[in-house]
Amino acid sequence: MNQITFASSNVSKFKEVDAFLGKYNIKVNLFRVELREIQSDSLEEIATEKAVAAYGIIKEKLIVEDTGLFIHALNDFPGSYSSFVLRTIGNIGILELLSSKTDRSATFKTVIAFNNGASTRIFTGTVSGVISPVIAKDGWGYDPIFIPLGHDGKVYIKTYGEMSIERKNVISHRSQALRKFIEWYTELI
Ligand code: ITT
Image 1 (tube, rainbow, N blue to C red):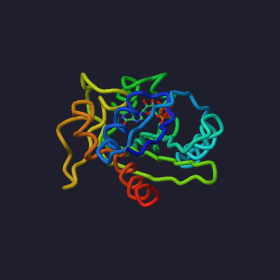
Image 2 (cartoon, helix red, strand yellow):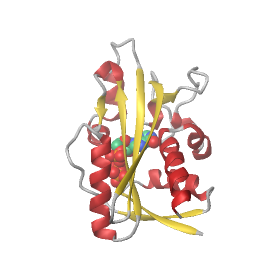
Image 3 (tube, rainbow, N blue to C red):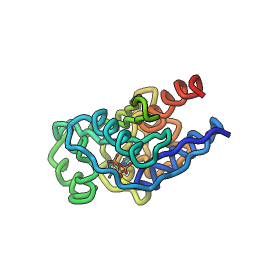
C-alpha cells in the first residue's frame, strides 16, 4: 500500500482526506502541525508556502491544503482569512453579517499542495452553494452553514454538516481537489 503524509493541524480535514485516498489504496499519515500561514489573498500562495515549510520539517513527500469560504455578498470575505474569522466571529457572526443580504451565494475552495523537496504541485477544487439561514446542529468549521449546489444546479436541502463524510466526499471542494491530485499521483507512483 502506498503512503503519503498529510501535514495539518486539522483532524476533521484529515478524516476526509484519509477516507478519500483510502479508496485508492493510499494510506494517509497525519503529521499534526500548526504551519505558519503567510498573509495573502491567494489560497494557492498560502498552500504552496505551507507545503515548502512542511517539507522543511518532515523531509519526505507530503501534501498540505488551504481552504477558504468566499461569500459573494461580502466581497468574498472571509476567503483566505477563513480560519481567523471562524475563531473570532464564528458562524453566528457570518449569519449576522448576511442578515440584511438577499444574495447568500458562496464558494468553498480547497487548494492541495504536494511537495517532494524538489518541486510543488497544486490541485484546486471548488463548490458553489448558499449560506443557510440557520446553523445546523452537526458538522465542523463552516459545514453547519454551507449548503452545496448539486451537479444539476439545484441547491441541496442539507448543509455539509448534515452529510456523512462519504456523502460530503462525493461532492465537496476538498474531494474535487483530491480527485485531481490522485489522477496525477497515480501516474507518478
Ligand atoms: P491547517 O492546519 O491544515 O491549515 P486549518 O484549520 O488552519 O488547518 P485552513 O486555514 O485551510 O485550515 O481552513 C480555514 C478555515 O476553514 C478553518 O477554520 C477550517 O476549520 C475551515 N474549513 C476548512 N475546510 C472546511 C470544510 O470542508 N468544511 C468546513 N469548514 C472548513
